[in-house]
Image (cartoon, rainbow, N blue to C red):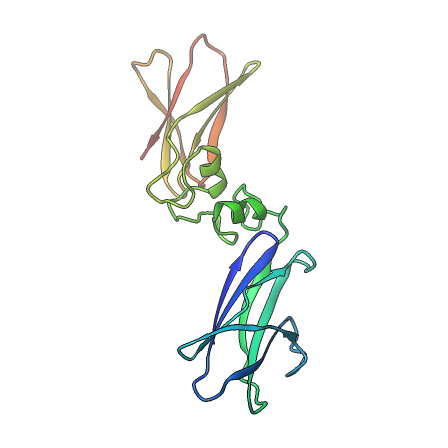
Length: 214
């Protein structure tokens, strides 16, 4: 028995493919959570037979009534002699759509819509948080499409904030200059996969900043 489960924001799409050579299927059932026992599950209908393969109805299982957590989905079939098959079990997880499971800046609902991983902050393993890539308009599912390395400067009163998209565990040298001709190292930072930077007090007419990957 093969089971294909596709998880969407509020339901599971369950597709079953059952193969029995010796006996025709006369019963089919599933359950979620604890096993209620043979014959006590929720009935499914076999809709097609072809070359010894039975296809069950495609079923949408609403998950909106389930609390966040991990559940077992069990499916089994009964042959013409009234004998039940072994139960095939698949495990799935229901997430709170408003919670950011992996703390990457995208809530679980947006992760599902974008096709990114709910359980890992960097779906394409390119070193940048999924939320950062979404904000910077690069593809969080493609390791070759990374955020553009642009510095952002924000000024509030006499304070200047310099930030840039950083790659996880990469080293950066922050340099500053008063004339764009002579640059001096200010400090070194280790990237965390997100936006990072420093604040500076503006106490001279001009200040230029840049981040240089080491």
